Image (tube, rainbow, N blue to C red):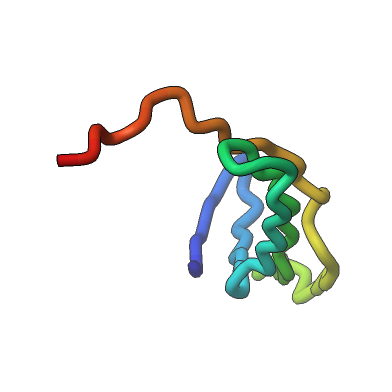
Length: 70
């Protein structure tokens, strides 16, 4: 994803590379997820560039309903 913003006279461009997703099944109906993303931020006014990774996101997916078998 590429985005641009301008505030207080400062113009920035942000590039987000595809994320890395790791999923681990704890039980049949519960999985834990870890997501990380590579980011690049460039200040168009000063040409300063910062590269790195985003914060590690941790989440869970829980199955609460089951499809009935026919």
